[in-house]
Amino acid sequence: MARAGLTAERLTRAGAELADEVGFDQVTVSALARRFDVRVASLYSHLRNSQDLRTRIALLALAELADRAAEALAGRSGKDALIAFAHVYRDYAREHPGRYAAARLRLDPETAAASAGVRHARMTRAILRGYDLPEPDETHAVRLLGSVFHGYVSLELAGGFDHSAPDPAESWSRALDALDALLRNWPAP
Amino acid sequence: MARAGLTAERLTRAGAELADEVGFDQVTVSALARRFDVRVASLYSHLRNSQDLRTRIALLALAELADRAAEALAGRSGKDALIAFAHVYRDYAREHPGRYAAARLRLDPETAAASAGVRHARMTRAILRGYDLPEPDETHAVRLLGSVFHGYVSLELAGGFDHSAPDPAESWSRALDALDALLRNWPAP
DNA sequence: GCAGCTACCTAACACCTTTAGGCAAGCCCG
DNA sequence: CGGGCTTGCCTAAAGGTGTTAGGTAGCTGC
Image (cartoon, rainbow over the protein chains, first blue to last red):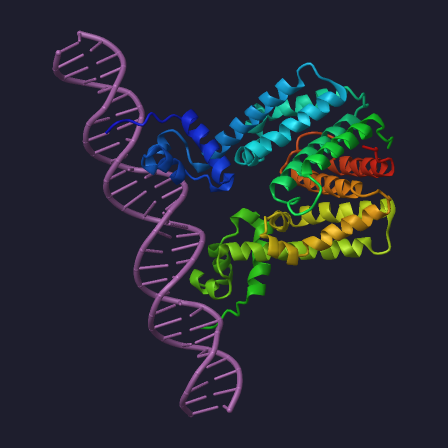
């Protein structure tokens, strides 16, 4: 009986691939076991339970996304940074819809605090520093940016823009122009 | 053996309540049967399957939300209309998180076309008419508004703003001010 | 008051999750 | 090089959900 060489890491990566192929909520311990040609119970030496699997995939996705974003931000500022950052989100979600859905999983506070989510927050603030907003407006703007990014990507992925012209890529680009203009002329309370 | 008086409507309404209590993805045919103190199989005379149940809840939520929005829009225009519309979304999502999640369910094209989703789209366009954008900018703006509304509400509901000041209600209000300012000074391509 | 419809039932099967306990593969040491 | 130990993967079993097939009893209408 040859050993399959399972580890939590390999399972997590395979789970992420599975998520991209069939959707995050179709990721199941059983499907993962099938993929490794192994009995279901065998995975429970490496994963506490199926929620644990989902959390690991979420953390993987958050980290990948933060890595890409950090790379895109390097050497950029102002509108350049804003647009590069935004494209990372949209491109990642389109390339890896399952992982992107995983990244939206609600994590318990300690897990979230230890996740790459905090890097995302820091990067968003870094971009806004180029626009020179006073606190607490910067926080309001952080939330607005996060909303637009997540909202747009999630509506597009859900097929919300499917049967209407124009190309979603164009609306995306115009939305980013608009956000840039808005941040440069941020209205007083 | 007394009859329970099941109908698709009653099941859908109870399913919506269940969704608000335990989360939309915990809505299960079994849980619904327990709630009516009836065997699971009995529901299959009224619902095709569990996907059918979820779809019905989604359609109910979309209709309720559209009704509320229509009421809020009556007699308003411009920034007033924008703000009233936005508050309907956020309030509904906070009152009925399960229903709101249901409203985000991906529907097949025919179902979507027959749903209250088209009323939402028409109302969004009606609000924008107050800002006098040329096509295709109006479409870009429709998508941006939808993204902000859905994105903000969904981040807030997911707990994204939980452990940071200031009050999410204030950021929401400032985001709407910002959107209004943006629409009044919509940047040329 | 009976016939028929149909609302709800039992039974059965398939699939997913999770735990308990067993066997043997492969490493570690003498 | 061989025996012991760890542990990776197994079988077995129990509980939950989804779904279908076919039966029985309550309500409706004549």
